[in-house]
Amino acid sequence: MSKATCLTESSATNEIRTKGYFVEKNLLNSDEIKTIESLMPNLIEEDITRFGSNKYYSDHGIAINLMFRGDIFRQVMTKPKLIEVVDSIMGETSILNAYNAPSTPPGGSNSAKVIHTDCPPERVIPGFITNLNLVIAISPFTKDKGATFYYPGSQEMLSAPSEDDFYRQAEQVELEPGDAIFFNAHIWHAAGVNQTEKTRYGLGMNFIKSYMRQRFDFPRMTSPELEKRLTALERRLLGFNVRVPASLEEFYVEPEKRLYLAKQG
Ligand SMILES: O=C(O)CCC(=O)C(=O)O
Image 1 (cartoon, rainbow, N blue to C red):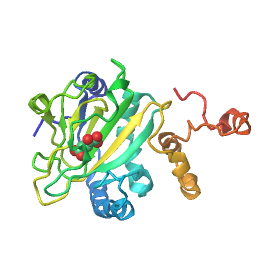
Image 2: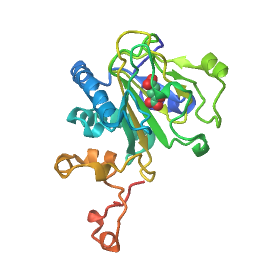
Image 3: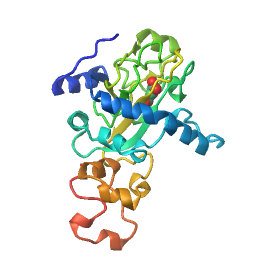
Image 4: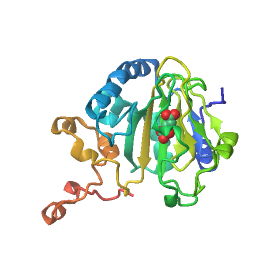
């Protein structure tokens, strides 16, 4: 197993800037892991039932938009330790771009098997992190279960490394259930192949600067019933503080009623 340690805030920030990733042990407890593991098969099946026959559907095995798929997923995205790390790297106004469950089926992988980054390389700003990713292991991320490969220090490389170069340099980072890997979304990485008979489950989040656009319009996707229950932190992460007015009537209102609140970075 690669060495996974609990890092202090400054060494975490330092590692993400140099190597491009770091591991935080025991982000989730065993109850949270069990609950999430029991929900996963149905969530994946639900998406396949809804979209499996859609020729544009490319996310087989990856349950999408978990913030709306059970309260436990919002509890995880707002865990104090997680938010402490996110805020220390991204500032206190970052929002969620995506929240999915990258799983690898027995004997296979997922669409993340190709060597890729999670943000187009042409958006690299040297020395500046615009997108922070996080993958939390729900099942063990061992080599035989398809643990993810990361190419250390590749976060500012503007084109894909060759397969030879990638697999020579990359570290296949093993995680125990509940451990998390935080990484710059510009790092070149690839899912492994699950050679076991059990699905490997994980959670994946991507945090972005508040002024960037999210993958989906999460505020518009939130039901009125759920909106009433959201905490201030959940509202921030879903993007409620940085919505855009659709009319001048929505724009000329008291500052606290604005859709795009002040001081969002
Ligand atoms: O499923 C995996 O191992 C990789 C996930 C991944 O590439 C991603 O979250 O961007």
